Every structure is written in C-alpha cells, then in structure tokens.
Amino acid sequence: DARVTQTPRHKVTEMGQEVTMRCQPILGHNTVFWYRQTMMQGLELLAYFRNRAPLDDSGMPKDRFSAEMPDATLATLKIQPSEPRDSAVYFCASGLGKTSVHADTQYFGPGTRLTVL
Amino acid sequence: TQLLEQSPQFLSIQEGENLTVYCNSSSVFSSLQWYRQEPGEGPVLLVTVVTGGEVKKLKRLTFQFGDARKDSSLHITAAQPGDTGLYLCAGPRHAGNMLTFGGGTRLMVKP
Image 1: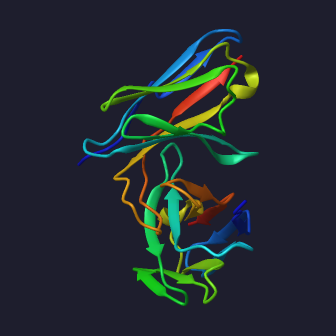
Image 2: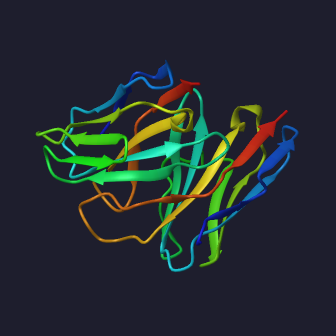
Image 3: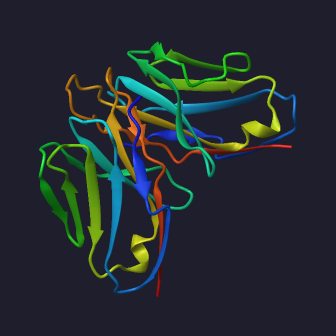
C-alpha cells in the first residue's frame, strides 16, 4: 500500500531555530506539493514541484522558507529562523501529474505538527 | 482568483441524521473533488465530479456537481460516527496540477 511519508510527525522548537521537514512521495509520482494547515487559514499551498523542478512557490514566505527536492524520493521544507506564527500542520502531497483539465488526485502524507514557542 | 466557499463551517449532528454540505464558487471549474480528513491524518480523496449535473454515489454519500459547474454538494444519509471529519472541496487551478481548496466543513456525528 503506497503512501506518502513525512518526518517528523511532531516538532516542538523555540523561536529562531531552524526546522527541517521531510517527505517521501509515492514512487512514480512526479508532482509534489507542500501545504500548511491552520484553523484560521485552512489549507494553504506553499510550494509545487514537477519532476523535481520548483514550479510555484508563490504561497511561501521567501525570507524564511525554502523547499527543495534533492532527489525523486525526498522533498524538504525548511524554516529558518522559525517564528511562533509558523505553528501549524505541514502536509506533503504527491500526484501522478496527469496532463488534463480535470483535477489530478493528490495523495497526502500524515503531516508534521510544528509548534514554535 | 478562483475561490471555493464551503458551508456550513461546522456541523454537529446525531447518528442517523441526514446532512448536506455545500461548496460554491463564482468561477467555473472543469471538475471538483471532495476530500475527507480525519483527525491527525491528511486529506483523502473521496470523489471527483467532472460533468455538469453529474451525481455520484459512494455508499451513503451522494455527490452532485452543479449544472453550471460552479458548485457541488455532498449529502450523507444516516450519518455514522465514522463520518466525523473535515470535508474539503477542491478544484483545479488554471495551470498545472495545483488545486484550490475550500475552507472545509467540520462534521461531528455523535453516537
């Protein structure tokens, strides 16, 4: 049963510290997405990769956030320095990236719950 | 900007009741999806509707896509505690494989 995996599941850190979240997309998927979810803002898209190339990061605060795909099996999201307002659940999702006008299915990981004190 | 608005935001009902939640937009979408998110997990796709007026059934869940492809509804018959969760609608953005998500309806079904 192929699944998206994310580590760590929970992270508590202090303001100013660097945070790195990791994601392993489903093998064979060529699109990867990073989302942030809060009660107030809902699910927000932070970054979108296709074939490991970043195609959209317009939703990501550029001064402190960065997203990369070092290889096809690993996507990372870094926050440096972290701030209390970054506290949220961060989800990674992957998809087949079908070229169609219709919505492509996204498969979500279990998320990383980040708390910045 | 394509926005999806979901209503109600919160819904608490007793087991056995029926309910309908809505997803509305002023924009036309080529398709809409419904995801369910259980506590501590990521969203999971329930269904994709692609044709205006289309109705899809998934056991006790009935999904409808509006004729004008600007809205969708999810009806649950005889709700069960296992239906508890956050229901999200999503539609494709103009370009690429990105999705726009609605704010979600948080459903609680009490035994």
